[in-house]
Length: 431
Image 1: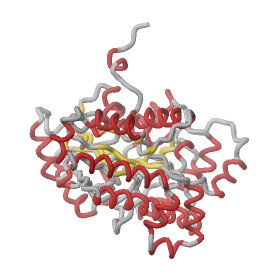
Image 2: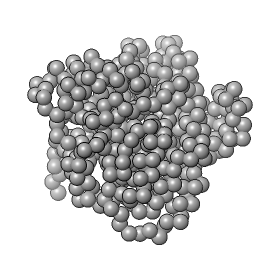
Image 3: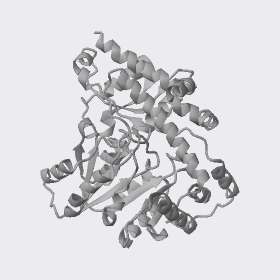
Image 4: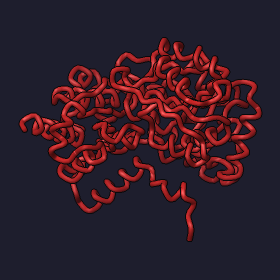
């Protein structure tokens, strides 16, 4: 059977592939330190479980846009939590934010501006619909954030008609770097976005997992007419497998909505009805649910800061995180030493750590970075979420005073991974 050339070149998503590999190795009894996959480990909130069980008999198709009751609840949630005004008719619910991003890329005209490093699927989604991708490489010096100068420079270097519509995909807090934008940094981008007719797909799936004194702001606050928000509850409510995403459209964009819904209707039909009913409870922003999210976020921050501090102590270059559960260290200052070991690309570095130390990570090249940039994406969620959550609830104030002791006791895989990265890096220094 002959395969379309573009599809033949496509490979399974790197994040999913590494997770499946680790699962297989662990089933065989191998000890693996898993820093390759970002799945929040905490248990499903009891209220959401009850709602799912109660509505398990709701087997009928929902409207393509999603149940009105859910869209109304999402509208209330964004108003309560983010002070953003979206009417239910501006909300679309579908099978995960990943599919909604793809549908939006497919529906909107214009090339895609993509700051790198960026999440593994963005570029491939654009390729699938034959959309031109213009990469904007960022650096540790700018905390891997898009700046007005880098945005403007990338536009001016292209041969595009500057008046033509362009798309920009921003993800913050960011996977893979853990970085995010302040409101001032977002505001600085707006004049360029307006002047050059740039529509922004703002992937804010990690918006509620912000810490280290960082307060999340959406670009939609400052550029409402040109910002499409995507999000969901997979990260902050640990519901990745529920596969439900949310898209929020600017006002007066009925054509865009109709186009995205048309694509959904021809591919997915609609999101799962029982999951949508459970989501109504998952988007009810009362004190109980918000407290659950806040506790999980504190733990994410604690674990990620622990790994960050261990990396710095080992002399590994890494930017301090602001949210999510990822870090993006690099060994570029040790290129000559690594070259002697034939570790000249991030892919070779990741393979070496997996083969020799049983430490799973992802190479920076999977996130759009140059192959010879020796950076890795590390996830910080390899621990028993139920155990950690219950223990934290029991003695939160004591744990907050000494978080390292807590991590050492209840996240042995993270501690072991840090030991390995230190051992590996120190061995280079002794060469």
